[in-house]
Length: 371
Image (tube, rainbow, N blue to C red):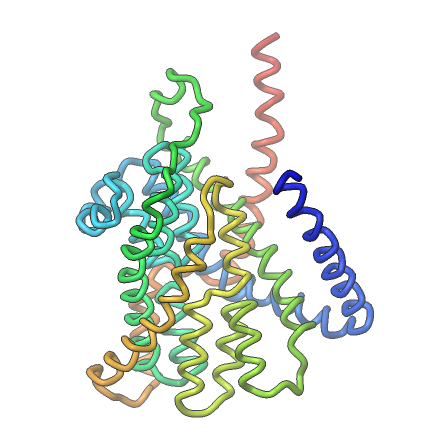
């Protein structure tokens, strides 16, 4: 029997049962389902679009304008350690460390589609670059949830260093995989032609809008699932563990309700595991040839490394009391390009309409030229 057919033979009943169970839960708990979707919309409106959308536009502009080679130069030695010779790979790594896993996925996929890196190199680079950004770890988790900028800073340093350590090990495990470059679909003359500044901006905004819509869709879906699958009266550790497996924010919120060291460790688990929501978003952002399984396997080593490094950073980082002035200073440092949420939300909607009109009118113009 064909392995694909055999795999589908058991997968279809499991998926059907899971979908039926979700439908039953939605019918039995409509209030919880509505609350989960509302919470997802609130998160998109309050934090995701204001913080991530401008960064996605900036990321695409950097990669398409040729500035990626200059910005990625400091990370070139580390990328060579991963077996990646592309000069632009360092910029994708920097975008992931600063902007989070969504920016990492967009940057790496753009490099792969342009033939700068192979599928195997993209998987290795994803292990190093995918994670949560400094704004979320320090400001949201450290200050808002744990009430300590020191713990947030220690978490960020531990997570980043664990990613940089685990990626070379993942590269050695992927030595047997021969990743190929993507097939070129563009004509040679069209590929050699460089777009002007207006074309770069339109392309960057269109890609950022499409990416943002996908991300928000998964945020709504997993907000619904978290609200349905995590009961209100569940023990704190169970809610934190379930949240860590489903969605990072839900896991960190549940972990912050615990006391002492378990609260910090469950936050580290949520941030290290990333959750099914992040993996689903990456799967939607990446080309089919780029697998997310190596990233999931690297997380098995990533979490123990994070815990070990967390103890070291907490021992050497100076202790301080979290104050409003210190929090404001950190927010000015890590959120310099964040737009007001109302302005960014309506700007996002306006650009979405603009890109939709642009896409629908382009085929009509081409047909007129052909005639």
